[in-house]
Length: 139
Image 1: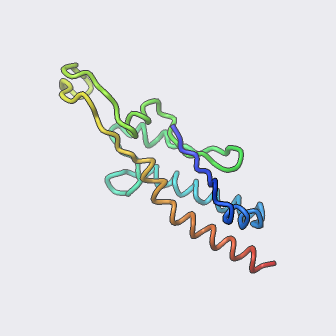
Image 2: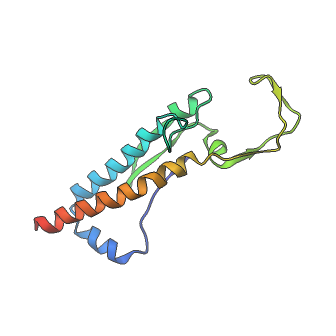
Image 3: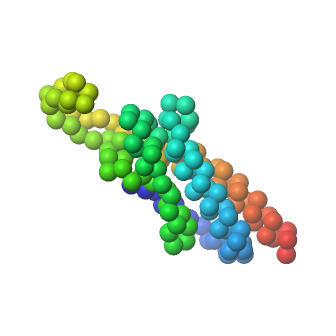
């Protein structure tokens, strides 16, 4: 599970970004992905946008990779989407790991990755603004 962020349909911003040197654009994108990854590696109970922790496996699976045009941050754990978006479960089924029978048919999502990306959005905008000012001011 991962979230890729693309900026589309904002012609003015795209024109300004096209003047941004490749080096500065790459640095801004890397900083954003790194901050999202660092926040993902923290506990959700102590850090807004952090990862919920039960066994710690989900948090450990947080990863970042380079993709065409930027970076992708996500989780390699197969159950990450179920924790993010919610999931159904069979009422009455006994789960040995928790020593209980399931009582709810639906477990709501925690939207931890969405929260993380939303928290990064104003930082990303500010970093882009600063990079553009440097680029335009430097020419």
